[in-house]
Image (cartoon, rainbow, N blue to C red; front, top):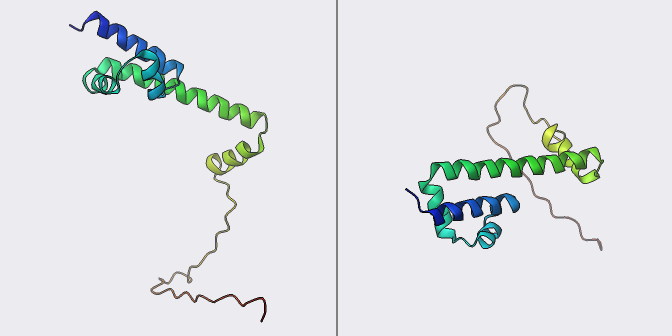
Length: 119
């Protein structure tokens, strides 16, 4: 059976993780728990792992909600990011270099030096 102070330390750590949105270093300092102890708990306590994963889910939900708020508020950089990552839109131009179904066996690239402005 786990000692009462260990149970209390785990509770403090989970609360600190939740407050810091999963930032371990911040939570460790806040809960006064050592990094080695925390990672030992993760290796040896399945229930603790489940609770830490729940905090991760809360963090992801929080980030997603802020992301969607920015899209709703039409923050330009976020709208562009969403268009690229969520809708697959891109600023890249793709060039079709197929050879009417034939395989490309060799590609040659010629590097040309730019002319000097004085010439």
